[in-house]
Each structure stands twice: as structure tokens, then as C-alpha cells.
Image (cartoon, rainbow, N blue to C red; front, top):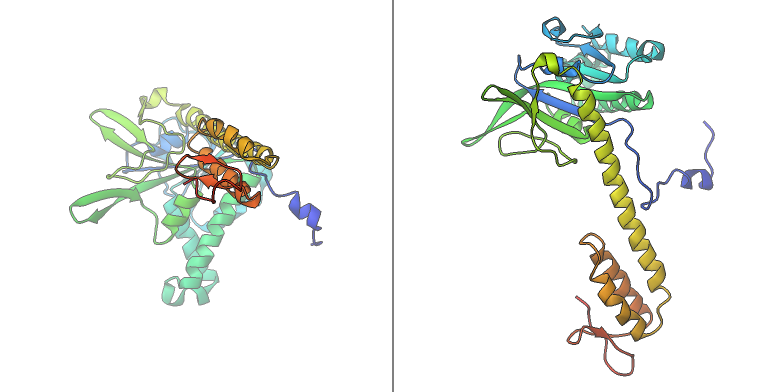
Length: 317
């Protein structure tokens, strides 16, 4: 592999003022067995469900399915992009069982990382790396990913918290890579999907969604496809908003750099007060730092900049 020039490396940097497109988000839903999670998986856009739990035959609205009995079944599929080409969404069901298959593969083929059949620290590192590589490979193939898993109950004193049923330290890695994490549960006769973390279950909800009532199975054949598209758009808007804030701050930085007198600094104060809570602290710091460089003091009692010979330097904050 040829080494890259400094300019080539610099070109890979995404400036803060540019939005970061999230073309292929990773979703995870979890809940108790029998609550139709697999059926939800089949409601994703052009899905291929990877049936690691051997339970796809019980799902409603069943679509194309790839049975998995070992990790080799997954690696064989990933080596055939032509087979994956017709599918927009890959649905590992369950991701917990897929991670079990990776573990078994490490035990069999890398025994030094699993003495006595139990993963060592190196073994856990290998498991984490393989999972990351798998998720990144799916994104490179331009696939959305919907991870499905069961829940497990953890107790913290009298408090019971539902978490995805994923082994050991792998849970934190899955939670880190997932863009959205939602819990499927029953509320009376209604199936609900809630991405908000609560004191009863974990979640991840960058879109700020309220809980969703899931339609009856026969009416939910597009439910996850539509929801995942909404999530993609929501992540794009978050990125655009962040980029807009960064651009506003940079514009202020360039403007402040031209200030040379106390009156110019003072004229900026009312406008800075109109900025958003995300922008204002950054611009205040830029203004104060510039005043120090230009040796223009700030009178903290009058909350005004003054000419150097009239007042000693103070602090805006």
C-alpha cells in the first residue's frame, strides 16, 4: 500500500462547518421473546434476515432469510457481494447469537485467545474487532443494519433494568456503534417501541422521538423501513445543525479578528447576546481572547471594553 501525501491525508478531514452524511445508520431493537421482533425485522427496506436463532419460521410477513449455524455462514455470505446486492438492509437476528458464533470461532481457530474455552483479554479484543469490522463492511457495501436481540433483566437493588441480551463487554461495543437503540414492550394490548433511555430500560434516541405504537403485524410490513428513513434524515439534520453552528462561530472569529478598538468590541456585545446557547459561549471566548491579544481591557462592572489607558483589564465572565 502506497503511503499517502500530507495533502491526501488532509483531504480526508471533514471540517466542522460541513455536515457529516449518515447514509447507513445502525439500528438495534430488543425485547422479550415472542413479541414479533423478527416480524419487525422483515418490515425493513429490502431486508435479508440472518437467522441465527433459527426462529424465522415463526415470523409474520417473512421475506428472504439466510440461515446461520456458525460464523462461517456469515463470512461466506460477506464474501459474495453479488448475493447481497439486491438487499438494502441486513438484519442479524439475534446479534447476541451472532456474537456467540464469533466467540465459538475464536475458541476453535485461535485457542491461545481462549484458554480452557473461555475468552482471554486478547480474545475479547478479537471479538470486538471482528464485530466492528463486520459493521464497517456492511456500511462499505452501502447496507443499512437492523440488529435484533432479546432482553435480559439486570437488578440494581430494587430497580430492574432491561438490557439487550448480549454477552460480556460486547454489549458496550454494540451500544457504541448503534445509532438508535429501542425497546419493544407491551403496554396493555399495544406493542410499543421506545428509543428513549428510562429507569426501566436502556435506549439511544438522537432524534428525540416519542414512543411509537407498533401497528398490528399485518399492517406493519413497512414499519421499520419508514422509521429507519426518518432516523437517517434526523441524523442528517443534527449534522447540518452542528455544521451551521460551527460556520456561525467561524464567521464571528473572522469578524472579530478585524477589531482594533474598544468601540468595535462593544458593538459586538449586543449581537453576541442574541446567539444560541450553543454558539454564545464559543463566541464570547473568541471575543475575550482577541481583546487580550489586542490589549483592550474589559471593565467587569460596566461590562464594557475600554481603551487601554482608561481602565485595567478584567474578565467578561
